Image: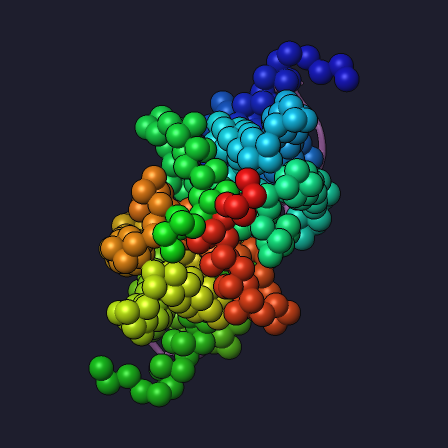
Length: 201
Length: 201
DNA sequence: GTCTATATGGGGATAGAC
DNA sequence: GTCTATCCCCATATAGAC
């Protein structure tokens, strides 16, 4: 990889601008001319760094999912083996929300525009999605092994339910105004214990 | 309203096709020529029924949210006053999921593409969104008044959490393959009681 | 109500200079 | 590495015939 610092800088700027614009206007709503202008280059120059518009969005998708995957993996690995199951799920939720919202331009691509992309782009990113789903399934199963998980809860259903709730935060939560740790605490409480107090209802 | 049956038929076909295509390709990814072809007319003819592409997508947004609003309102109104709070929230969840997934082309516009639309279109649909949020807040408060809701649960946070989880089902749930009542039962269980068994952890 | 024809502007991608 | 220039195609919207 003999890329110069200049090329890396431009490439990163292009990706940052593309991620933000895809989030705001959708994939088809952003032109390569728009991205180039935001990155301070001309449209033709993009083809030195990427082969096509599809390759740009595919890279954005990959970055978003890999950032969150790595953070959540490290977070759950850091929970002591002797800790209760509640600590595992709480750490995973906090880590997902923190990383997901810290890089929301990139992660939004996975949530909001994935379903609108050309089939070839979606197919290229499926393995990364499957890995992240498998990570969450392993987290839930780890909790189940430690005891306390309700027997009627299906692992895949819970994973889809919780990730749906967490990923929707990008539509309304503003990290500049709200406290992510407080958000994570509340979401963990709802995920683990639900709306009702078991002793009263 | 002296619209002929012919005009109404075409208008409805245009909206159905537009909703489906917006879902699949995003707002900017669908041309009026695409919509016209799907509806069996020529592009110029769309302007007899709608003033612009923006007016088409605004109509799709409104239809989606009004369908769900009406269904959930009727569902919670049908729960007896003497019934426990659990029955209220379960009825609301079942009704939201049933209607939301039954008209998923229309409701997807509200979830997936709202954030990518021109500001004027978003602004026009904000009142309907606020009404639906208020409906859910009133449902949660109604449960709280009947007792059993955990004191630490914030109404707006729970509403955002639950609607996020439910609305994400359109990304994976296929009504042709899955049982919506079973899905609603599982989601209601997770929303009301969470992942853990309170007696064991 | 729907058509054809057209005005006007923007799209992804490529070639080759520097 | 980045530029300019360009190929070829498609976009929304309008005007006026039928």
